[in-house]
Image (cartoon, rainbow, N blue to C red; front, side, top):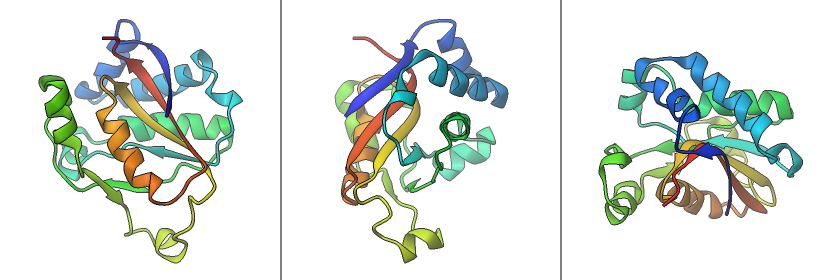
Length: 170
């Protein structure tokens, strides 16, 4: 999986990304704009944009999903649909406090298809042969993106590309 990133995990992008903890939805939208302007993602073939979901408890506490807000900006500009194909069915701890191995275990089986949406129930082949853009705010070890992609691969997309605001360089 190719991963496009706006920046290494450093300011000023890191600062914008961390504003999610202070409920700053505008910063998330600004990150979406940076994703378009600071990467070549708009040059690749995309059929659907899928944001990494939050567990409902984290969503309730934060009030929004930063990845979804970034995806909406990217989707609007690229004229591509954002679909919430995935749900987070496991309440995971914050990845930042974990080792590489712990991160992998933390997100193992954390995602599943969001069958609650009627369109997915009626059309189980919705991703077959399609180019998918998976969006998240941060890629450190890639554990979250890999776990989500594993679920998506069951639906036989043509390709999965990831787009993140920050990428930690190890």
